[in-house]
Image 1 (cartoon, rainbow, N blue to C red):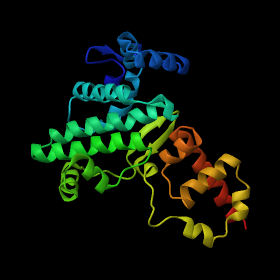
Image 2 (tube, one colour; image 1 turned 60 degrees about the vertical axis):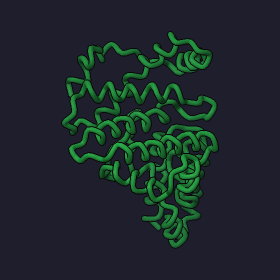
Image 3 (cartoon, helix red, strand yellow; image 1 turned 180 degrees about the vertical axis):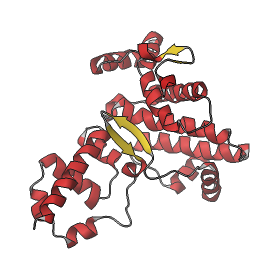
Image 4 (cartoon, rainbow, N blue to C red; image 1 turned 120 degrees about the vertical axis):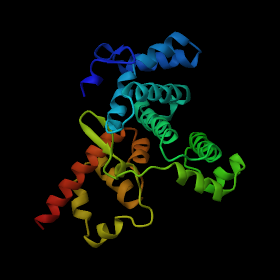
Length: 260
């Protein structure tokens, strides 16, 4: 992994700046006012985020420099589309965008070729979904996306399926302060929620042992079937913090139930 610490695309990664929260807020205000120097400084201040993401693709045969450049494109798109009024950390918003950009690049350069028209359909649907989610503060349905871009639902399903690559639920997505987020942490199960076994075990006493925030997280995650990202947005903390608090709460509850 030495390559990540020395030089990528002519950039000495050991000298990359780290922006403080107040610097980020100030720069973003200037960016929204059209200050291109502020935009350039914000990009440089988040290149370490790109590095943390491309580590996830270390098993890829692609050149590290190429992945870094593609990741930077995702970073720039994130900066151009980020809305700081949504009470979401920039890194939380940017990481999936950077990953998506790299995955698109890898799919387009995959030995199994997908037709250009099918890729275009998939990317139009993904782009429309992102815009509609930001506009309405909720994920659109497939029919809504289809109506938005004027393409039949069946074609969208086929196109999205064609560009997908298998992903393990235990694939790491991002590490924030030592707490790793996995694919499974971003998935909600609305059909088979865990409130069934929660009710069966009669966990009211165990729930009372939790802090107010932990109680709220467990309620949202397992009774309302929300993803960690949705919970983070609702209680205004990062997804990494939700993951950490959730794991601690479940551990405490399990210990309490074990001794009953």
